[in-house]
Length: 607
Image 1 (tube, rainbow, N blue to C red):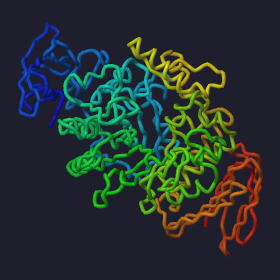
Image 2: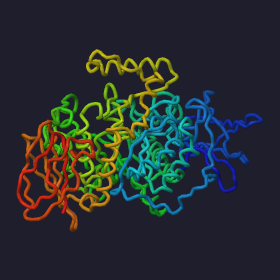
Image 3: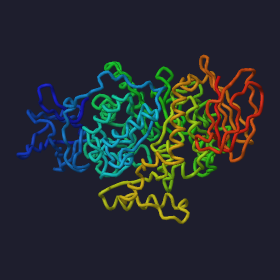
Image 4: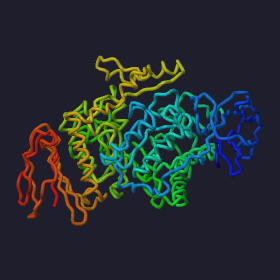
């Protein structure tokens, strides 16, 4: 069922809103010459409709509920005056796309760059992102992932407080700006992934419950009432979210959706809502002749999320692999608080290379019980790995990036660990040149009581971690400004050297079949627990590589046996050209010997 406002072929403007419990609904159309109130008609499913002739593009409107409350359209295409103001109709057919031959990047071949539109550039807009695409292209990026752009309160937010899931944030550039960004990306062979939130809505401007039973108290979530995916009237609730997914693909040419925190979605229906969205996405892909992908974030380590329906799964194409991050981060930083208590030695990183999930049904100290199930039989191309992302940086007390937690040599090791994994790599904006600006949590609510509650809640949550330092105020505009990237650093000293290293690692991943093809079959690993070292061997066709990692602060000597074959050194992170301390590894290896690895270093050899 199509919802929201949409233009028909005869140029009439049709409105459809689901409000089954309302006894009366009126469309209030706002014209330059005045207002027009149009009674709406209700069908048997609780959908109210109205049609306007000759309304023209950009008409603003509101819905008047039976209690005389004026509210925006829950499926509004645009909220130009914010989450409390009138909705604006958008004629999507008016935009001229220049990507008619675009067929998407294969998911397995993506090199993903996650960014927040507001802090990525000084402008903080979609146009600002467009101005930096050539630099991302030069780095080797072929997919960008936008943190949520659905309309949220004010002008500063991560995006997870969105309340109008069909509307594009006005301060970023609105619908026109997002379409221009997607079109520009496709013209440069860059795919666009959009982060969407189907587990909750933000607290300010969230009027959904006034229209219909969108929420349920059957389940408890971190954000309050759960979305009603399996109770009374849930069929129409499910329609709202399925339509939203298709909306981004069809009207904005988005290539993939990243589904935020699906562990916060509760659904005991015969067909899970994720499976329904997956099925609808596949049908759309067939109809349009272009692949569209779904990527999940989940902390459940439940392989059902990405298994096909034939195996009892939901059919999601890929998911973030947090265990890989946690294992790598704990080794590099030595942190053991929170969930890092479950990640104590190099064997867990080695297991993640082989099986993706470290916790695949084994006991978790952090969770105080068995956690997860096995995904070892699934292709490596179904997992996305990273050394940093917005959560793992921004949810820290002081928003520290990895560059603030480890030394320069360890940053190169972190990058190499991601790019030789065989998984889909993701970079968080700025990590490629060791950005030092924090990425704080920030908001710009207008509800004073909500602002107080947010600030108080964060102080209480982090009171044992502040170490006497003052917690930054998320409402303060300065918190947002301090989180913006400092692009000029890309050309300075160690920042420029790390940028070159990232560029080279991405180049190697694309050029070498052993790295480019997501295969588990020809992967071998060996660990040296005491030295915190790991050897990873990968192969595809005639190409093979040996990657050696030292994740300790001490030099290590590791035995390598090439079995009579002549291996040549491809890259050593300790080389002076990467501002390293100087390589001590041989240029070639053709006989069994011990190779010396500098502290926090990475070496790769290839046939």
